[in-house]
Amino acid sequence: MRTLPTTLCSVLVVASLSGCDMFGGPSADIPDAELRSKWRECKTISNPSRTKVLACENYERECDRRRKKGNIACY
Image (cartoon, rainbow, N blue to C red):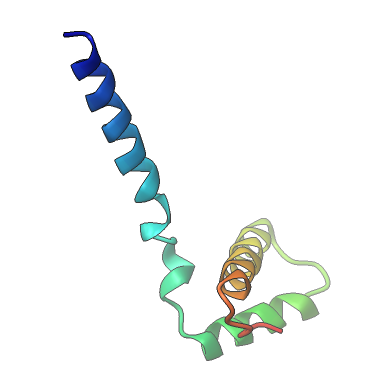
């Protein structure tokens, strides 16, 4: 009787974790050419604003995510 709640809980945890990468964030929808352009622009900024730093970190993270999948759009 106690195994049913444990099993259901385990199934819910696995289902929620498997969907984590399903929505890669706003930068996941950017085409390769546009991501490459924004990523390169970030490399040339000498004194970025706090907002730009966050955006550039997101672009870098998306480039790394794509690179791990075999897409070398940013390199």
